[in-house]
Image (cartoon, rainbow, N blue to C red; front, top):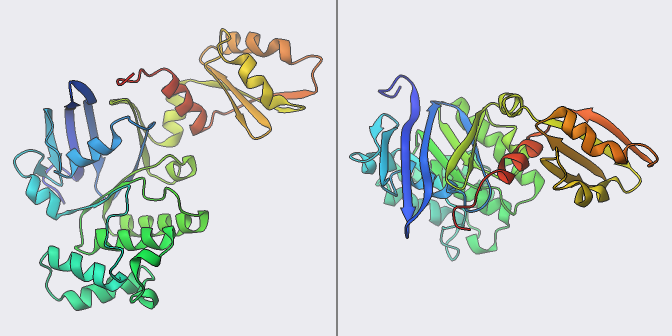
Length: 310
């Protein structure tokens, strides 16, 4: 257990700027050990910069805190030794085999009993039968699995995964998440950035950041309830085409097509009802009130945030 009461991450007031622009602005977060936290937000919102500060790769301009009970500033090298960081871009050597890549990582960490550890890792993530395959010939899903194996080879207490399932097929994504829950069951804390709402819902809690600022955190149900968003769902003849007509209408915070269906949301129930009223009668469209989805909530949060690079 870490020195700060079972918190894997406990940071406050983190600020990081590049070229005079704040990429992360007054960010605070507390994550208990052994939990999976989803890290969501639009592109350019400071997610990657925040992950790099948490694992000691970047030093905050302002703010303080601990990661794994270690000071974020003065003990960054020790944090790195106990953290596995999986970057967005595959960063292992494509001209080496799977086994050779893992052996290289084991040497970097100066691990003892390297041969046995690499073999255990290969078997644990289903890579053993492919151990002599050249990494550059692997599909996206197998590369992702190898990258995860490299991240956990040194038995870290914290995993920071930056959009690890981007570009892989649904089956590989599902298998990856099964493994993440297995790791969390062993007490490893996981912070994973993702754009997939179904993945966010598999996390114990969610953190939403937009353009450097923390906008919401909690379980999926808590975030949906706290946003106090009202949503109507429409389906029927060309219901999805009403999105462009409703956007910008008083009372409508967002109007988004989901296939042939339409979700229209707002924070004022009466104003939202008035906005959709002209499209309810005389149209071959069915309307029904519904619980907002996480995607409804995040579209709403993003639309109200200012891009700090605009």
